[in-house]
Amino acid sequence: MSNIFSKKKARLSISSSAFIILISLYFGFVLNYPVVDKLITLAAETGDGYFAYSSPLLLSAAFAIIFSLFTWPFITKPFFILLVSSSAMTSFATLQYGVIFDYSMIENIFETNTGEALSYVNLSSIGFSVVFGVIPSILIALVSFDRSASLKVRIIKRVAVIIGAVVVISAIYLSSYKEYASVGRNNSYLNQLIVPTHIFNSVKYVDRTYFTEPLEYKIIGEDATAMTAENNKPLLVVLIVGETARSANINYNGYERNTNPYTENQGIISIQDVSSCGTATAHSLPCMFSNLNRKGYNKLRANSQDNALDIIQRAGVKVLWKENDGGDKAVAKNINNLLITPSENPEYCGSIYCFDEVMLKNFDQEISENQNSNQLFAFHIIGSHGPTYWKRYPKEKELFTPSCNQSDIENCSDEEIVNVYDNTIAYTDFVISETIKKLESYKEEYNVALMYISDHGESLGENGLYLHGTPYALAPEEQTKIPWFLWMDASFEQAYNINRQCVEEKAQKGGFSHDNLFHTLIHFSAVTTSAINPEMSIIASCRD
Image (cartoon, rainbow, N blue to C red; front, side, top):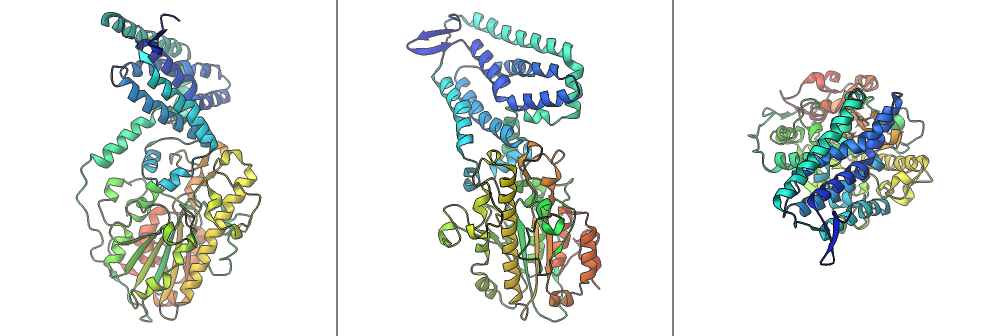
């Protein structure tokens, strides 16, 4: 040990080769515990899981080769401090919530707001980050590298580390290749669980976002025109874009608990079996408003062309986006956009979050500003965003107890998590109900209607998964199946010749997705354009 560590000027001194070995072992045995644990579990299911216990050593050897490339004067400390601190946080998220840091998750992280980020801060996350991120980073900052040996000796030691790592990898490869290949082939997502692969996706995101030349903007639906209502009254539609609501907890969709008590007598049409475009807001929101289907979606393309709201606005409809969920993800970049701020709405807000009923504040005034015009209001609500679910609704709207009133939800019981989540669903139902009541007060002057659709679902601990953002190919239905509601006043149906029974039958049959929103929303807003595919619209074939 005296050859590795020595006191020099009262500071811990270590050779660069020894540092590579130690940091590699730390990543292999400690920070990658979540993937090792998952691999051991999967391997055990095959009946021969002993080989998986070599995975920490295999990872450590691979890291030793990679880290050898980054252990040089002036870059070693900043590089590994950043790597260790960020890896500790990703390791915690994977261990506690089952989060996989693929490109979509990295995109979601970069585009999150301060309030959302702070909602994940709790004693568990802080403690884990301090023990496994901050303290090791401090040690890296304090250590000095012993360069007393000649350059030749240091190079020989570095090469010896690499050769030793290759020998370890080769030995494990020769003894357990078939077992590793079998598990890896059937569970390819394991590669994305390895810490610190999040760095590669982070670099990819930065490159695509800041260093990729934007595409030429494409105008879609230049021929968009407003339909003429039979009764000659203007249109007034509210679109409520939900957050993190899943179909499984919707009473209309078969959930045994009544999570829709406020709208149950208001004539809601619930569309069954609806799939989201993604499992995170940063992906789903721009995707669902574009004419690109889920499989063909590309963020760069979506941001470089008109979306459904742009086309509706082109037809002369006055469109206003009201934001209560931290950002529109560029969906509303070309239309009027009102950001709800806590400081201006203290009766509905805390220091960071606002209850969604704030959307109806000043609604009458906003309608009057474009009186006698066709109008579409898009409410982007915070809905059921976790993990601080209990902050999404006023205390007096709590219907189900006991509830999980803490952000480290993994430490709550299943009952408490489901109760607090169901409270958010019920509160969203209240907001929808109040919006319908407000619209009904305008039905003598306008043809009124409402649409509600969620961006993605949520996992509540099923199979060890919490929250959302799991890669779509691996995501459970809890994260991909979403609610989609329609409400239409009778005068709206008559004015635009909509056969309600036809719509109800299609809704009951279901089998739709976010791919259908672009076409359906434009039709629902009484706009015609060649950009619509009638077969993709739920409304088109139900016009008499």
